Amino acid sequence: DVKVTQSSRYLVKRTGEKVFLECVQDMDHENMFWYRQDPGLGLRLIYFSYDVKMKEKGDIPEGYSVSREKKERFSLILESASTNQTSMYLCASSSPLEPQHFGDGTRLSIL
Amino acid sequence: QKEVEQNSGPLSVPEGAIASLNCTYSDRGSQSFFWYRQYSGKSPELIMFIYSNGDKEDGRFTAQLNKASQYVSLLIRDSQPSDSATYLCAVRGNNAGNMLTFGGGTRLMVKP
Image (cartoon, rainbow over all chains, first blue to last red; front, side):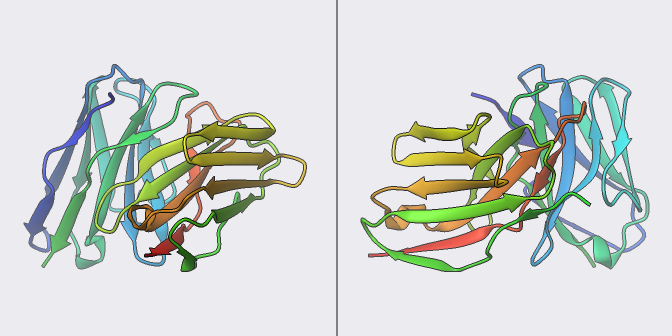
């Protein structure tokens, strides 16, 4: 079975903090993705990566950055957290042309 | 703007009935189609995918694809209360990054 592990299920941070969300997959997948999910807005792609050290902007990259130094790990960084970044964050991974598999998600609250 | 549309519901069906969930998409170049189930507070879980026109069956689930009409559907036979969840339709176009476009989801309620 595909295993995508997100470092935290729940996280509470303060406005202005730098926040790191970590995602690790154990299936040697080339592609990794970060989404956020908000009521009424559905799943929105923040960033994705199709190879080590490669990254591409998704639909809503503003306020976020990513890092992929190793194939199995994809990190999402909130440079200076703001209250409008309170959301459910979902990481996914896949091989090319294969379905994406999601981690359990991180529910992030910015106070 | 590539769009994937789903009726938000809720779709309410009695236990044992067939639930029919529908999804339409705007990009004619779309290649692959996926159905995810998401329980409240949980992450999406892949339940079906379909690449070719026609039907694909897996247990109580059947995915149906009609590329000419640009719709994909999911049928759930013998619906159970445990099937109550939000079902997300996702479509992959002809892109190298394997990106998906998700619909907003249909909330299904199966009543005992």
